[in-house]
Every structure is written in structure tokens, then in C-alpha cells.
Image (cartoon, rainbow, N blue to C red; front, side, top):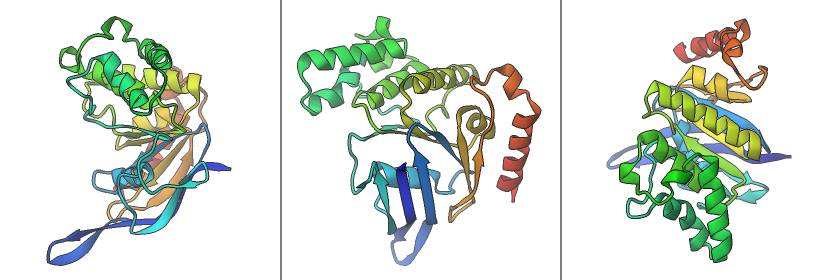
Length: 251
């Protein structure tokens, strides 16, 4: 049984005194538990719109989304979200940011402390637990955002170009960190990107979207061994996946 199912999802945004704009054409999607799936497409193709519908942040014009068999109508703790702009609370420390959702959901104080400590350690920020976001680098802030998203033990982790604002070296380290966390926890991941190499490197499946109004036009199952070390990334198979996806995006 698929953990995330979107059926006949479309989104139209109304404009003042003009025809509604179709941001997402009718789209179907199914993701199995524990899968790492990337949504790949050019800017403005509806990737983030589809992600936000699944996250409960955007209301679909048609269709339904279910997570774990439950129909999605609003945000919920079963879906963790990580955005490109970090979205941390500047008045809270690293620990305070990770603990925030747990306290909001009335978890026992000792459990809050334990879970937050484990996640902060998992993302390598134990020495910075009492620091505020303003003193952290971009990569460190994104580590906090990932830890916070995982704190409520969501069924699905939704990530909207989370490494897009990072420099190449930091981005590579964050990709490795994310894959390490995913390998340990096996949380289902839906990851939005416009970077072909990033999608192939990270995912079990890459769903390629067309330009607006966006729709999924191809579903690539990435049959490459993990971990995807340098030899895998330089392989003929990796290059062929890249060629096919680039051809789709160009047309």
C-alpha cells in the first residue's frame, strides 16, 4: 500500500479581474513507505505547489491527497516540512527550535529533552545546542530545520529545494547528511529540486514535471547502488539518466 497518494490533483490560482491561472494540471502520484522520491522540473512548473498540497498548505482545486490512508485537509504532525529559507525562530536556540513542536503537542518534558538531544546529535550540532540561529551558517541552520522537521516522527518528510541557497561544498555535505539520516530512519521523503544531478544522486525515483501548467510526465526508477560514491556518480548509467531527464526538460 502506498503511503502518499494524490489522485487527480490540480490547482488554479485566482487573479483579480482575470481568468484563474492553472499552476498544476491534473496529476496523480503514489509513493511507497520508506521511498526517497524527487520532484524534478524547471522553476514555475508546479513542484512546490504539489508539495504544498500534500503538506496541507495549499488547497487543491480538484482531487484528494491521502497520507497513511487519511485524507489531507490541513497541515499535521504526520508531515514534516523543510523549506529553502530555513524558517527558524530567531528568538529560540537550536535546542528551542527542535523542541518547539514537541512542546506544542504537549509531550512530557523529559521526552522532549531526550528526543531533541538525539536529533541535534544526529545532525552534528550538539556543540551548538544553546546557540541562536543568527550565529549559525546556512548549512547549520538547515541542519536545525531538518532536526525540527523530524522531531515529531512524521510519516513523510517534505523538502522544498532545501539546499538551493547553499554553496556547492556545503550542499554536497548536506546531501550526504540527509542520505545518512534517511538510511537510519527510513522516513518517506518527497524532495523538490530543479537540479538533475541532485535528483539522481538522492532518489529511488525521480518524477519529472513539465513546464506550466505542470504535470508529471515521466517516472524514473533510479537503479543505482547505494551509497552513491564517486564511481557511481561517474558511471555510464548515471550519465544516461541525466541525458534522458535533460532531454525531457528541454522539450
